[in-house]
Image (cartoon, rainbow, N blue to C red; front, side):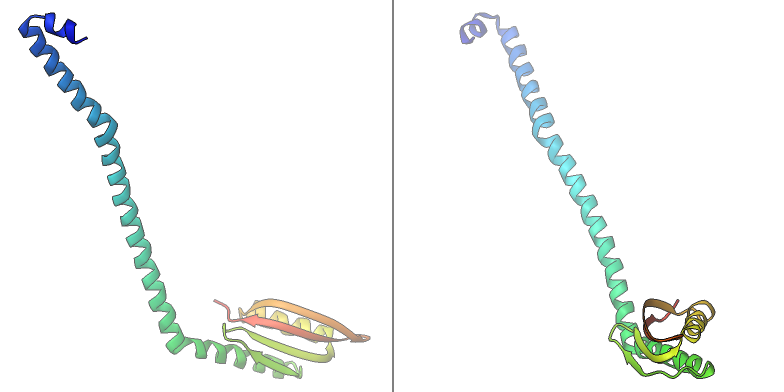
Length: 155
């Protein structure tokens, strides 16, 4: 190949050298620099998305801290007050109330009429907007049940 190149006239040698240099630059650009530029642009977009996510998470953290500081105890008190008011208005004796750390409330009724429990749940969920997470019923005697109900504050 070198022999062929040396046998060419000087102007062809210069032209071939310039062409080889241009092909080398083009090959470097397409093979190395182009993909690096694309990867750089993708990394920049990924960093922008991560910054947006971080900003949203920080806003959520601030909201949670604000709610923990002021609103969480108020939510529990409202749900507790609501349960007490409805159970008293329907003459439904509560055996046990147990609040949880996540704002939910567990209420236990023993030996009460099934229809009274259903009316209590209807009032809480449909009328007042509380969220009934779980209901466990056990039949004690004819028409009477024991019920454990897990509630959460509604929207």
